[in-house]
Image (tube, rainbow, N blue to C red; front, side, top):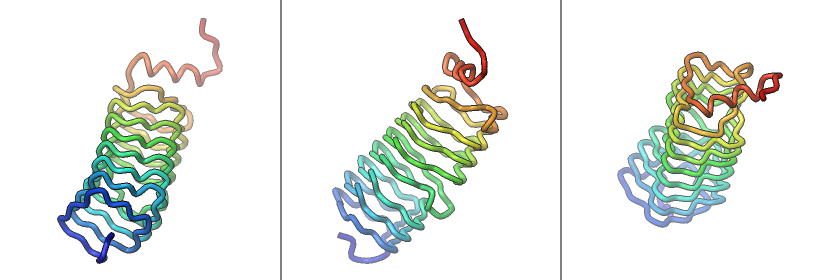
Length: 188
C-alpha cells in the first residue's frame, strides 16, 4: 500500500493497489506487481522500470511516463492517449495487445520482442520508432508519421502507404509484400 505521494529510488515487489492518485515515482522499480484494472490518476513515473508486472485493463488519467521501461509485462487493453507529455516508454518482451495510441508523440519509441496484436496507432508521430521482432497482427496504422521507422524484423503488419507517411521507413521481405494486398490488383 502506498503511504505517501512521493517515492524515490524504491523497489516495489508484488504490489496490487488498484487506485493510485497523484503519486510521483522517480527511479523506482516495480517487480511482479498486479495493477490490472487499476486506476492511475495524475501519477508521474520518471526513470522507472516495470518487470513482470500486469497492468491489463488499467485506466490512465493525466499520467506522465518519462524514460520508462516495461520488461516482460502484460499490458492488455490500455488506452495511452490520456497520458501527458513527455511520453517516453520502451516495451521489451511485452504483450501490448488491444491498446490504443491516438494522437501521441511516439518518436523514437522502442517496441522490442513484443506482441502488439489488434492495437490502434492513429495520427501518431512514430518517426524513427523501432518495431524490433514484434508481431503486429490486426494492428491498425491510420494517418501516422512513420518516417524512418524500422519494421525490418517484425511481422504481420498491414500499413497502408496512402494513409501513412512511410518516407524512408524500413521494411523487409516477405512481410513488405503486404503492401500489395492494399492495391486494387489481382496477383496470380
